[in-house]
Image (cartoon, rainbow, N blue to C red):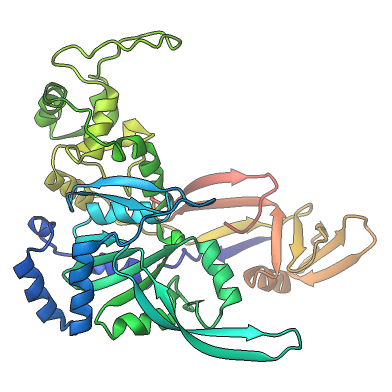
Length: 422
């Protein structure tokens, strides 16, 4: 019996969808901070109230307003922002840091400030005493957003958190945190209302919104991104530029073939100097980190050098991205072949059942001890599978799927013990 199940691609948040709209038709020459005069004009166009204007101007002058703190699960990261011309610090290596780097790279964000001005937000507090009596009161709670962003579409502040932490917060404070039905947008109504009165959009962002390839590339480049100073000399950059300038765009592997390798034994601590007119692989990665070379960090995996396209300019990279096929699902289903011997579980139960026979139109099954037997029609079995009330554990799965290629690629036949969830 073959069962075809539809695939639901992971939902996007409102902010992810907006980023796509904001980035359309944005001239590359506008990827720079506002002048004071331009910002005043923008504040007029946005209709920002006086309270919001003061907040934005004060944040531009004084951010960061507090020192970032490293905790058990937070790692402080420092980064030299090319767009802002300053060194910025983030409290979260895998959540806030990727966001900051993206804003430094994108064509949407004109300015961004970590740890902008602190505000006091009226917040509902609910307590439950030992005798079961619930009390509710309002207090003003000090709050500092993670990031203030200024862009052509208007100002916004963002708070970035791990998806797991947001889920726990929603369970503990359901009146304060919740996720939209049908998409991946998180909300904090109290903060949204407070900043809306200032003419600023409040965005509660989740780690699940980060492209996994982008974050993987950041890990690959991290040592070069957080360096206090460049290691590229004029001579090494000239050597790289001489090669990439002729080709315009080439694979990272091909560029690295021209790199100098001193072939020093692995257990020898001595590093020979780079000969004049040559460069090393480390110099290429440093050039990518400094945006002297351009790579599509959302698409190309830097650990797979033969398939990475390196460009000499941002305009060339935009052309490469434009020619790439749009991310979409070529097929939108899994095809399961349920047969004798296939194992499955009912939702909410720990017992594993095995299909023992499949007479015409029926599915007979038994538990692992062969003490419990059951029967379902093929239609009932398929309906339960569609509703995820049955989870297949081992069967033949034939699937050919291409979801957004920066998330996943699959093309296989599997006879092993496999879960339906992905």
